[in-house]
Amino acid sequence: MKNVLQFLLILLVLALGNGIPGAAANEQGRQSGESLYTDSQTGSERQEQTANEWYLNAMRLKRERDFEGAIREFSNAISMEPEEPIYYLNRGVTLSFLEQFEQAIDDFDRTLELDPGFVSAYTARGAARRRTSDLEGALADFDLAISVSHTDEKVENAIARSSAYLHRGSLLLRLGRTEEAIQQLDEALSESTFPLLYMLHTVKGHALLVAGRNNEAIAAYDASIETISEQPMALMGRAVVRYRLGEQEEGDADCLKANQLSDESVLCDDLEDFVLRVLLEE
Image (cartoon, rainbow, N blue to C red):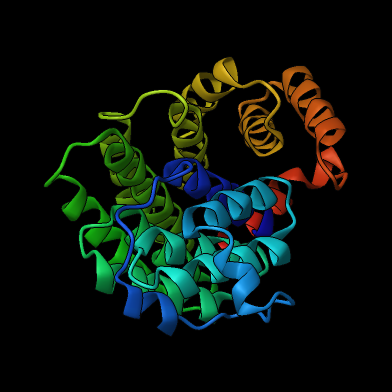
């Protein structure tokens, strides 16, 4: 399941984009922010850079996967402009990459205090709550992301809404609410465009696999793999369904390719048990 959740977190980062911060906070606010990570630089040295410069450097470090360095830079930006919601949001996402979910939730809470219409923050907080086993809280956040996003049809809101649909569908599947998950993913597919479509098709394929709707599952996996071919979990899922349908040779080909792409190798004879365990267990 960790691979599935990492996949969803990557989608969340896609939904956030690079984000452009708003206006500067007032001078009193600049002096009052607190840093989550201790910075070696003095206050006067930090003042030589603007908050936006710290933020842009943090985003660069995040892209380079220097997450602790990025958190320090986000914290410097926050110390200068503590009223800028996107700084907290991206620090929270970075904390999630380090699996520091409680601290991440605190940052998402602060984001939403500053901007209750920040759709990506609801999705991000829901994803973090899921990892802390607050499943009902996670579902509530995904519902809020979907409802709030409809009040402003910006491109980034549409992407964040699709991300929320995807997270919610995956969580419903985990909770055994399979038909509801399929319905949720169909709703997302009805309004989504690339690059989200292949992800939505993959998770819908998983839900249909669990429901035993094999021919529909094959169609969903095909739609996903036609767009992005190198997806281990989509290939594994399609292999399982092909084995169920007696398509041994095609199933073996999908299983072999999935194993070539995956970090862990799975015996094809054990593939169905493995896939169901990954999809249904945390």
